[in-house]
Image (tube, rainbow, N blue to C red; front, top):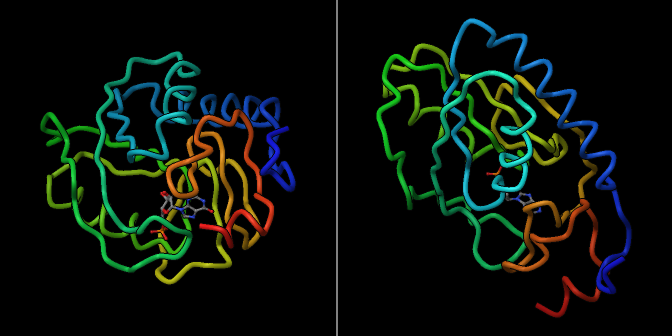
Length: 180
Ligand code: IMP
């Protein structure tokens, strides 16, 4: 275990099982449609990489990047589009792939933005859900795991750009959050 980690919430094995289960549900729901997986950078890259390989159906993949967080653990509330999709999703079945839904603000902006592009359908797959912190209501179609009101890292999720490479989802020791 990484020395900065206080507690592992989801082991690599548990994540594998969650992703496999979610991929099965998505594959069944999209058996007659070819979804465009829209990964939300940067946090969703690890989840998206595993999810797409677990899907036995044809998919397209694209990415968007929003800025909502400063280099810390609290939301500034400001959301800007830093990187847009590389191809048109008009008439396509978009499945947004998020690492974690916290206040819901990022996802709400993204959903509103996607709805303006005349997509055929729009759904969301989030690995982690932190409902205790929600500020705006968002509908999540596929959720892997509900986390308590704690700032988590690993499996793509960062704290001040670090810890994304941990293969598990964990909570850091309090002194690490205080030190930044
Ligand atoms: P929201 O707009 O508050 O829902 O925040 C969504 C984004 O904030 C996620 O895509 C993450 O990048 C980041 N985020 C929210 N909670 C956490 C956390 O516990 N750890 C790491 N990143 C988080």
